[in-house]
Image (cartoon, rainbow, N blue to C red; front, side, top):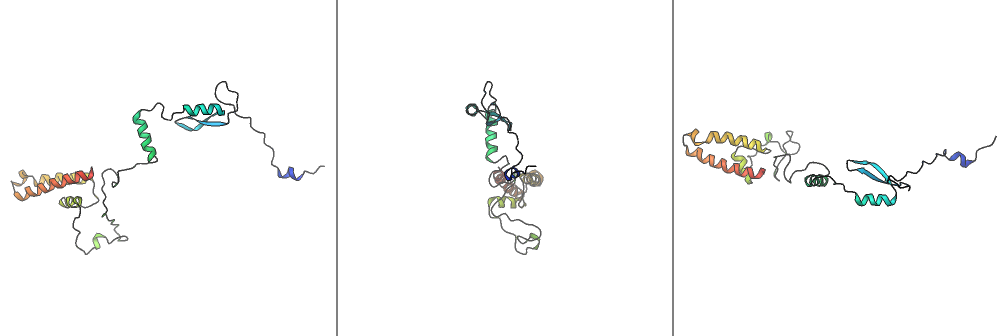
Length: 188
């Protein structure tokens, strides 16, 4: 009985080499060694070409072929943010507002002293938006729908027809209208 040589022991079983792919261009007998995407909607499916035909395929490739200008622009914009939603700077969600003085009230007082345990006087509004919210007796965070609902309630309550021409109510209504105009601009 013959002993196997050390090379034969350490060498794995020889696998037959697969037959080379043929170029998928009609009439070409060359080896298809280069892959290219099959279509825009099937980027992980490939067709195989020889060097000459893959170069021609790449020159003619148009990812946006068959798309309208609006679809192309949408694709470009979604690619700039990696297909994730984005909002204008300073906005969270559809109509939310945020400013640099915004504080997180976590209810446990872990980050800042919570409102319920605070013994200091309430802060005076600093920005125009805070003044407008104070006129509506609202506090941040607030959505535009909250402001709009509060505005409708106050207009019904302060309207001259509902108050018999009371001058104080009329002045308060003017303040409310100015505050509403300011808040509409900040949510736009």
